[in-house]
Structure formats: C-alpha cells, structure tokens
Length: 550
Ligand code: COA
Image (cartoon, rainbow, N blue to C red; front, side, top):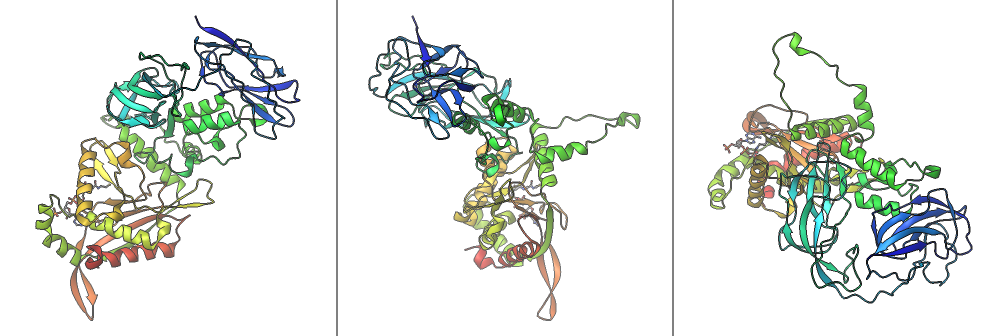
C-alpha cells in the first residue's frame, strides 16, 4: 500500500506570507527528492521550494497567488513503501536567499532515512515522452542498437513531423537490451521505444520511484523524458549546435524553468512570459514547443515578411487541364529552408573562372589509380580540397552569424556540405573533417554519401555540422548561377560546366579548360573585397595541381 506523504514549506528564514508565483508540478508527476515543486516570490527574493521526498504527486494543496509560510501544506505525495523521505533541501533562491536553518524536513509522515545505494541494474522500458500532442510522428533515425552503452540524455531516436525534427534522449544511463522501433515507424506519446538495463543509483540517472534497496527482479517503469525540439531546416539540422537556441540569459524565468527549457532546446529569449511581471512559466515553454512543432513559430522575421506576400489563389483549371502533384516532405522542408535563407540573408554573388587544365589532366591520368583504390576522382573531390584551402586562408567564410547580429562564431573545423539532387528533392550531406582527408578518401566518402542520399538512407547526423556548401551543376550545363546560402553558413560555391576557352598567356592565346565559379555570400558578414579574394584564391589553388594533390 502506497504511503502518502505531506510535503510542506520548509524553513524559509524569516519570510512569512510569501506569494506562490508558480506551481512546477501537477498530479501524476513523478518527482525526486530536491525536484523544485513551487516558486515563491517576496519583494526581495525569488525562491524555489524543492521536494523533500520522492514519489508521485497525488494532490496539489495550493494555487498560484496563495500566501505561504513555513509549514504550509504544498502537496500530497504517494510514495512506495521503500521510498525514503530524507531531510528537506534548502530552497533555491535566484536573488539573495533568505537565511537557512538546519531544521529537518517539513514532512509529516515518518521519514525513514535513505541508505547509501549501491548501483543496481534495472530493466526499464523507455517510452515516447510528451511530444506536444503530436501523433504518428515518423521515426527518421534509430540512433542506438542492442548492446550500445548509452549515457543519460544520449539521443535514442530522431523523429520528424512536417514542421520539425526532434531527438528523444535516454532518461537513463545503461545498456540497450532491445530496440522496439525502426526507421519509418509512426509513433506517438507512450509508445515503447527500447528496453534498457539501466544503471540506477551509482550514476546520475534519474530514478522515478526508485526504492532505496532495489528489488532483485527487473521492474518495468514508465518514463517521461523531455524531447528536444528544433524547427526543421531542410537537412541542416544544426540548430542545437548553433547559436539560434542560445538564451540571452535575460529572460525572466526560474532555475527550474530554465532547466526545463534547456532540456527541450527552447531559447528562453524567444518565449513570451505570461506570468507575473512577464515571468516565463512552464506552460509558456510547452506552448512555444507546440508552436514550433506545428510550424506556427517559424523563424521570426521571415515568417512575418513572407506572410505579407502570400500568393493569390488562382483556379488554373479555368484555363486548361491541370494535374495536382503533391510535394514530397523533403521538397517542403527544403523550400522552407531556402525561402528563409533567401528572405533573411542579403545575398551577393561573385563570379570567377579557374584554369583547371592541369587538374583535369591529373584527374584523367589518375583514373587507373583511383579505380585500384575502388573509387573515381571527380571534379568535386578537387573542389572540396580547394574550398578547405580557401577557408583556411579566409576564415570569415567559415563562420556563422549570431541571431542577434552581434557576434560571429568562427569555426575551427572544416565540414563541407555537397548539394545532391535526389528524386525526393535536394539534400546536403556533409563531408566531415575534409581537411584531414586525401583526394582518394574524399572521393570515396563523396560517392558513399551521394549514394546514401539517393537510397534515402542518409541519417540526420550525415547532414549536420556543415561549414560551407558546394553545389555543382558542372555535369549538366550552364555558365553561371546564383546559389542560395545554406544558413546558418555564410557562403556557398556554385560550380558550372567547364569548357575550353582561348586564354591570352605570354602574348598568345592558348586553349585552356576553364571552370566557372559562382560564390554567393552573406553580405552582412562578408564584404565585396573578401568575396573577390576568396574566388581568386580558389582559382589559384585549382590551377596549382601540386598543392591540390598534396
Ligand atoms: N565541368 C565539366 N564536367 C563536369 C563537371 C564540371 N564542372 N563536374 C562534373 N563533370 C563531369 C565529370 O567529369 C563526369 O564525367 P566523366 O565521367 O567523364 O569523368 C560527369 O560530369 C559526371 O560527374 P559526377 O560523377 O557527377 O561527378 P561530380 O564530381 O560532379 O559529383 C557526386 C560527384 C558523387 C556528388 C555525384 O555522384 C553527384 O551526385 N552529382 C550530382 C550532384 C547534384 O545533384 N548536383 C545538383 C546540385 S543542385
């Protein structure tokens, strides 16, 4: 029979009749000792009251606006017989904290003291947590397999709705025993994802309803980890790593809400607070997440601007027969991403030509060697090398602009994205650490990524972390084009078809193989001189095969 514990306001110094400004838990929540349960605010300080016991919240005994003092009843907690109710932790204050005392927990039920717990392994079924009410969301990547040892919060799955992608993190550290979903499955809240042999007690794993002395037999436990949500960006799901999701630190929110927002990947500086004095509440954070997931919350400015220019609805059937073609998910994601980049980035495109006569001779003469190594040296392989060289010489091209427009994040790694057209739409797989690979290694990786893209087998991890993108139409036709920057990168190189041209060298025209280059860049970050210098560097290195092949 479950034991019911009354959790009361502990000693909060000399403070009396303090207003409850937020209730951080709800009936049914499983909480641990020290989890914050309410926020109080006096005119001097804001403080969070941590739970003095672990268990399931049965009933909340107060509401926001109530005034409380030491001993006021906060909630009833249902604990299993073995759950300990140790001494109350001190409240966490954001501003100068009230004086603490050494008084014991304000818990009325008998409080057996928790013994030191040796780490135990428990078999636990991990389920899909609350994902903002979304149903039947597609699993686009299963990131673990049986036998994998995962850390707390390691991503287990990637899900993708029409509007957003999200990772489901592991609520436990441990070893994956069984994987219960596969790529392509449609899942909703509560669906079992995996069975884990979770390490409980000796590691920082959360322990909902974890008894002080764990049973020897495996126990099934439901979990509610928080998903991480990010707006879909057409294959460039880098938002976690980029500054988009960095909070300015100015938002008015309690430590618990900050932690909650961090777990969800929500930037607090973009959340409007509905609480007292604009304070951000838990509901505000979940509402923001829901809005991102449903596409209502696009990238700020662009969505507003775009809505000003909504296309008129035209009945084309009035003029002749029409067939309606549904766009693929990739088409839709790609078009949103490109549109956002086009609207938010002031583009300039710089054109140049590179003399690749020697490069092409080298490529042809090394065909046999490439075949021996099981690959094919394509022009793109050399272009990746050349781009890395130019990025090292012009580091501003290897940066991203902070959303507030006040800082540049200068990257010290060289990951090159390659635009690949597939029958589902455009994707941009990324060749990681291109500076550490030779021509043959680059060629092999490029071919493998392009093949995976066409087979629809590219996991999100292969499309993340790009620094600079190359889009080549050289195998088709054209003399130049104006590619759209793949935000949050700041530049992209378009490559058109090479052709023999007469070039005036040392007093006479010579036939040379010339490669057209079109460099689009973000003019907020790169000025015209830098743009011209970058393509000049590219043209020089592309015509210097010794350096290129080294
Ligand atoms: N000028 C003239 N010819 C070119 C060229 C250029 N800039 N780029 C490629 N070619 C030629 C190649 O030399 C090759 O001819 P070959 O077989 O006689 O050597 C032919 O076009 C096909 O090239 P490809 O194998 O596609 O090489 P690549 O380096 O352009 O691309 C991959 C390599 C792996 C990315 C490729 O498989 C691929 O997917 N290409 C398509 C990329 C794409 O979708 N671009 C659209 C972007 S929106």
